Image 1 (cartoon, rainbow, N blue to C red):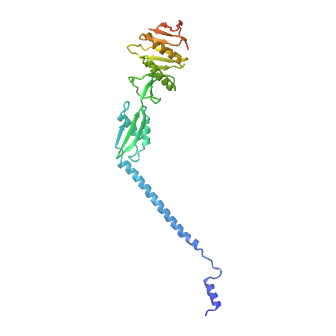
Image 2 (image 1 turned 45 degrees about the horizontal axis):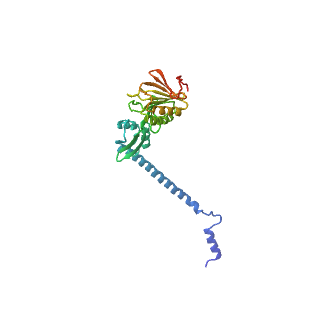
Image 3 (image 1 turned 60 degrees about the vertical axis):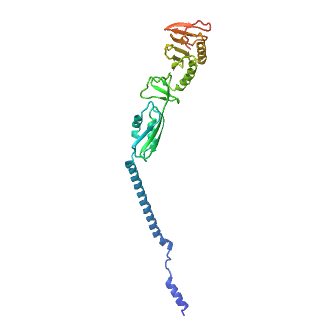
Length: 285
């Protein structure tokens, strides 16, 4: 049997006085740090490999899968497929998978005649481009056209044989002039007259030039800037009558009188008053 004293001595040997107690949690910290560093190394390694693979794939796509064919679709009257391909040549950067389709579309929209465009990839190595041209409805001043959407655009070359009416006016008032032209076309068509040109001058006065043909010499109709609708109604009412005066050799029809109008034939003023007013002086209104 062991004595209590011996037991105490043994216990004292196992845990002598003044001994420092070991913190097991603190002892495990270096191992955890080593594991974290290993995972960080693995993460960086896989990230580098993924980036290298992405760069390799991108280079492969650009070199191995280039854009080899560009199909142009749409009804082209003022543009050509070769012209469109030449326009987008600078935007064909990269390969089939990496090319920026928005950049290609933006390049097409810079052309004055292009109203809208869509660009799609066409497997295996092409692009499909759908182009919508603008529809010109009138000439605007001397250097532009007016589209059916009401936009003013300026092509490098403007053909003068498109059979369009001519509009002229201050900058920014093209919509107002075109709206009035549409009204005039309907009313003048009922009279058998065709408008060649409509002008809104700097004083905001309206001038209508009839189209020249065998029956008309291209007379100028002055509506002025005030009471325009009343004067227009008077003109259409008079020239719709069976015994209406002929415009075949008329140079100017001046509607700027309170109750009548004046007709000038071959630069000689020839008054024609339908309401008893014999004053033939040109009005400044």
